[in-house]
Image (cartoon, rainbow, N blue to C red; front, side, top):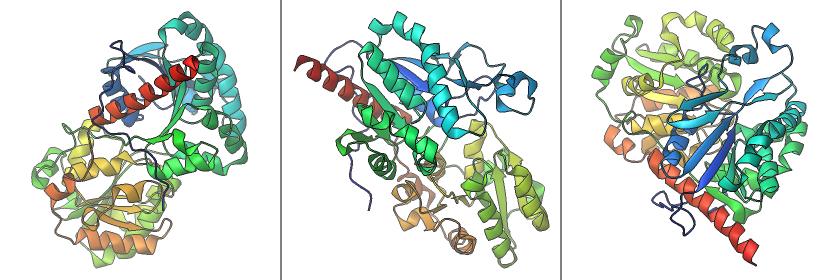
Length: 423
């Protein structure tokens, strides 16, 4: 059973630790959209846009760079060279400082990023040191480490927001795990998107009383119950799918997301459910491998690539169910969004997924890396007579509520620092 941590009330609308002045916050993060990757990390864009309406918020969204990146056309850094140094995204003032990294060397890369990020931000921090109340690092390392170092330099608290892979995956690697041991215990608060992730933070040295759980939200204007037939017409339902049932996967096409398990699971049940198809939305490193694995099933499996955010809820509404067979997760927002659309979910019992699928009416959970169990669960849930309204009613809160809860944590950290200064 997961440890119990304070779950910050989403109805809290603190304004600044007892003061009418709005809290002044700097966010440092590597996971944020930009002009080249506008669909990246929509959860941070949505939460921080809502948070920006409650406080004075600036974002430093870092761009990875290495010497000679412009000469390597297939590298991500080569593509990101066109990102402007400053931008306005979702109404927020966003800077895009370049930070050095070494491709393929996670531990060394993180240390270099901190070493290059701190000097890149230092002049800006020093100019505005009297205009900042708190620094929020949104990703454990190196963003959290830079937030802690810079916050200490100007005498304000640092808060680290953790998401999933930054703890679940990086903590399994010696270099990154060592790196995590610096910032996490030194943050005034660690914000986790699930209790399971909070427990992981404690295992990495964070005092339990510094952990707060702030769930993500959903955009009710996008993710809502719709008529399935109307949704299928809106997305120009592919002719090979006919009028049958559809399993939807929406996310990165990666091995650790369980995509290969999903294709194997579908292959195992395809003959028993001839009206069932599998549609995958997303791009990723394993796309070519996934297409090769799916080829024997022909048009029963459809790859549609990355889709604009506004189109995703239409695909969810058009589906019979969504599946997320990940090997590790924090608190995947795609599950919240599918539930808000009234669609059941088949997920793996990892990370914060059990906290989201906490009732049989919401779908089913299976062990990770078990295609046979996954296939049987897909058949079971696809055959149910689901109640979309009942499912949607249990999907969670809004982004405004999530942002208000995050603001309450930031104010709490600031208030604690003031009390320590007076003591």
